[in-house]
Image 1 (cartoon, helix red, strand yellow):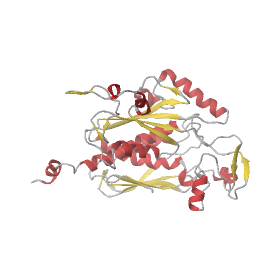
Image 2 (tube, one colour; image 1 turned 90 degrees about the horizontal axis):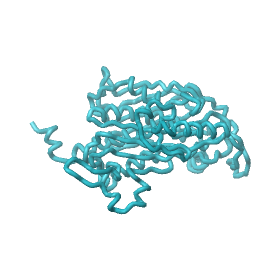
Image 3 (cartoon, helix red, strand yellow; image 1 turned 90 degrees about the vertical axis):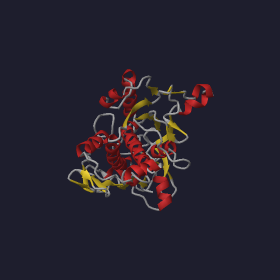
Image 4 (cartoon, helix red, strand yellow; image 1 turned 45 degrees about the vertical axis):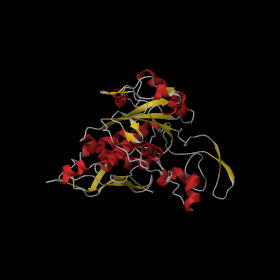
Amino acid sequence: MNTFGKKFCITTFGESHGKALGCIVDGVPAGLVIDEVFIQSELDRRKPGKSKLETARKEDDKVEILSGTFQGVSTGTPIMMVIFNGNQKSRDYDNVKDLFRPGHADFTYFHKYGIRDYRGGGRSSARETAARVAGGAIAKLMLKEIGITIQSGLSEVDGIKATKYDFNHAKKSLLYALDSSVEKAQEEAILSAKKNHDSVGGVVLTVAKGVPIGLGEPLYYKLDAILAEAMMGINACKAVEIGDGVASTSLKGSQNNDGITPYGFTSNHAGGILGGISNGDDVIVKSHFKPTPSIFQPQDTINTHNEAMKFELKGRHDPCVAIRGSIVCEAMMALVLADMTLLNMGKKMEHLQKIYQK
């Protein structure tokens, strides 16, 4: 499936080494101011080649809006955006066209479809996430109008964990580090792996503030369940935690429960979600990314004829995908919350009466 969402929907298209990639965003209410400068700034945060910590592939990632707007505002019709590829080096992949790269989707795509685009992974490439960031920027613009904001940063790299979370610092950091006291160590871990033709994993913390009570559709479209689905749908994401997540399994109920007062909750172990519905507190999600599978070391694999062989990868790759993955996490959080806000509008008669009663 290439479409995500029920009311606020995004459909992405394109491949890593194709002519272009992009998305169609459907369900955007008419009258939303479409800030193209903001949309481009989001893509600039995710685009490759900004520092030595990322892939050397440089793309402008200039977005063009082809439909769905008029005089700077949304018309209520589908918004189509396209990003043209400009720096493909498809020849770097000639040596893998008949074999499967360990850790990649090559093996499963080939066996599922009987054909695969071997140039950078084609549709399975993380380059597709540029389209999600473009769509997520539209969602952020809508959410901003109702007071919801989203921020993210790296809380862990190669096992080096942040002990404090400073989102303002993350905005200025080359690796979107949340803790300046461990940022240098995290950076050195990434550069060391790169020097040794290897890679490292990381954890992204994403937080949404201003989320109202009531978002989430039990039982089978719960807010936490769809957030987990959205994050797990990002390339290289292998685990998702809501609130305290795994840590809550070692707590007692008396420790894990969030006390309720007339002024709000006394803690937020639940990550802002109870029973699959937002409780008005911050929504907190941690997304765990595996080490980039594209490493420049000899590896064992097989070819399309099931013959054992060794190969060495070429090309340009991120030594830690979690860095740019943090921007994608924000986009997916925004897409989920935008969808949930629209779904929630018809849940009470008073909502309908406000719109339709004369």
